[in-house]
Image (cartoon, rainbow, N blue to C red):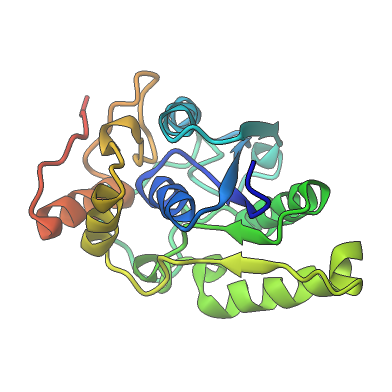
Length: 224
């Protein structure tokens, strides 16, 4: 096994699958981490498992959380409708503290594994809507990671890798295809059904579709 290990946050969507493929292309032994956090689109967990199997990660772990216990998001509260048209400001699909919590648990697993790199699939398309997708957040979390851990204090610092930050959806699709990624395995829809079929109307569906159009390739998404 390679000594160059990384923990990859893998939701099962387009971005995180691309990040996993890229980390493997860089020579990392990849450990993928998903969360069953009370999301309404739980079929993404099956997608994450499919992607992890296709890319033959060293280990795929699923951690159960209860973010639906605090609610506040259309992704974790079934009484809040998923928007079907673009909105201004921070969208109701923002999940409070989600990336902070996910990165914290990834950090803990990375320290146990002796991994120095943690990959997350945040990208430029999300900057304006989600505060925990901004470069400033990633940089701040990396500083915190190196202050708050035994490995960091002992000089074995962590890097929070967000290689898609400056890329468009079309560029992300093209990158994944170069690495041989099968996007038909992924699920991006905020309200996908139990079979992983997409609504075609939410922000995530719209951005995904625009990405495939921009990349000039067929979109493998199945819709209900």
